[in-house]
Image 1: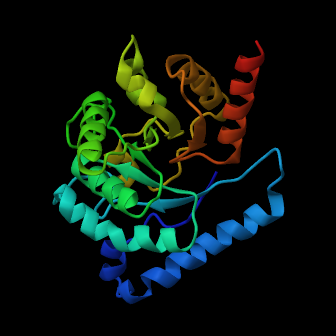
Image 2 (image 1 turned 30 degrees about the horizontal axis):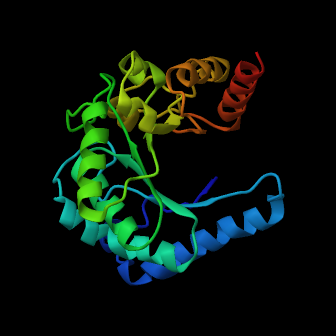
Length: 250
């Protein structure tokens, strides 16, 4: 899966820097770049999906001024429509920190005939920055998106949090756990506030990163997409791939 480099290419952020009129062009260039990589490396037995990335209209770590779901739908619709026009395979709302914005993006995607994934971020206590539990957030999003569109997000992800911040909340049997299909974890154990204030890169331990993903795979039977967020690079993703391959072969 190739993510477009568009986490800050939505209407709200482009308005801040005077580029709102260029939204379509900016997102088109990002999609075309991913397509050029896919054309070079895709093989019949290794299809590559182009994933249009939608980021939060506000800060990724702090809720700030929250929108209603209809307001979020309207705010994100221009970028979602740009992705639809340019032929992405799916979109993902990445680093969502409260449910109303995620619901708005998912409704915009459904109205644009695009599959959508919702990825929530959590604090060191495993709850969203809004204070809501990941379980409640998933259940509410499913319920309200289905009520509005008759559809559901493809699956959910957790990103921009170290596994230690949320793995203890994934124990036991629960229907909502089966809705988590992806993890893009931080290599760093720092809190969001500490990451914001940090002047050096905390890249953690790539080998430990892989072991933690193997543990997460045991907790999340429907895990199918992995990646890295703050502090990670190819070493961390490679370590996770090796650990999960070894787990499957064991």
